[in-house]
Length: 340
Image (cartoon, rainbow, N blue to C red):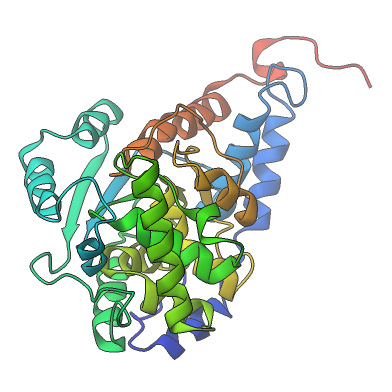
């Protein structure tokens, strides 16, 4: 297991991204060998079999597990809300964090059902980022503190990590990140978020366009700093730490995937240890998943955030483990195998 120290500069993040562990191929082969002996036609469990092999690679063992599942929700506030880009006021972020802590949110119920531990990491909620239409969201020092908070939140003993976010205004931030990374029109990356009408979406797209134009050409990690936010940087930090600590990840919706897209842009393959839990109803999420080469496990029309889609999808990962570990082989069940 790579136990790299928490990076202190953007250059150190870049260095880690250029030397990522590639997983355990021997564990993958062991899982596939066992899969070929289980009482089913080859490939009959389709994606469940793929998930079992994926877990083996990134857990670094053939004895895959999904018992210790952690769900981490990062929360931050955004100065761009001053531009009227959200149907809800910024104070809702603080109120929802209190709701998480009191056990009243959707993610609390999903974690209970899943048997997962929920951690909520609130990041300077009293200090919103700068309005990205006027200045970089974060200076390097503040960015690195947020990135480190995510990096340090990952426990290498976990079998699986689900990450998500809470932050009023952060679908605007997600759109800005995608527009900054991939170009196209701002409108292609902008959606209703928490419920904007068509006029609101148009206004939001204009804000995204203005923000990206203001900051000009940026490296992927500078896109993350300049157009992102504290919870955005923290999710990226958590995903990088998970790769280094042999913890597979289930990503949540549009904001979560946009937060980690700069890692993939900086180092292709950086998200190979991540599954897309679901495809959000936020229109640009499907386009972003295509860019990332991720096929979502679920498409339930969800758009809540707070790791809710990832937590539901984690049940499928657990199903993959249960079938792989629990099924009898042809020899054990005294069932005739495929004739050669």
